[in-house]
Image (cartoon, rainbow, N blue to C red; front, side, top):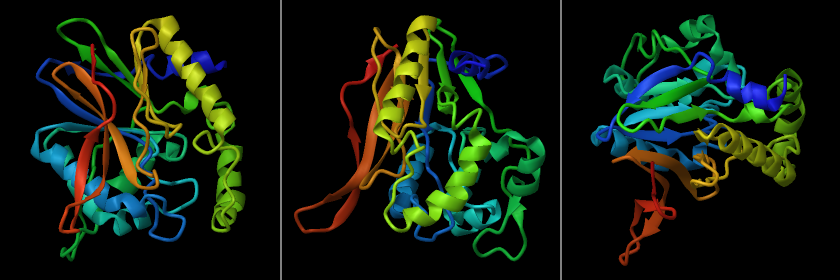
Length: 290
């Protein structure tokens, strides 16, 4: 199957969610939540992420995670990830309880595509201060793709992780996972970057981005993905957008959907004149009306 067919297949039976002018969504990808060790790339930005999550929860946004939320290539134990980042999963559960949580899977957490895996690992968790396990995502289904169905103007938004454009991380994912878990994970601790990763290999990143952009242009659809970790705002000429990731050195990025606008946003630390730190939300470029 070609890369083009793999992307198209992600939407062949995709969940469709109504999109109105009053709708509010935040799209976040590539958190890569880990087990709290030196390989946990999410750890350094967990406070930024939690602050952003609180902001969107309080303002009535629905949360959509576009895959690679949890690092299940490097780590075997999903329960350990949930335990380490229990505050994050508590807040995600609050979104779920309000009917405002949607999850996609990527290449690094594709185990979640199996409903049995989700029932086993995502149904309950140990919440802080609770003696017994409490419900987490008891009926959660992780998706390969979803469509925000424009109910007013017909400009639908197509959401997927984006690894479908990358042979090694889709068709060849079993081999890639083996290499990451047993070769690149220990080498990463020594400062060696994984050359098979679209997020770290520049030429591979450019190739994946071109394919995603070509698909959006040829299909004349607004495509929003993650995978490459490079935040990107599209245009009418090339309607491909990328949320970026939560593992940048000093920030996390995401895309907000509000008032029929797509806005690329960065969350980062800033310093006041009295040298106290605060979490700041910053727009990256101009919003795009659809």
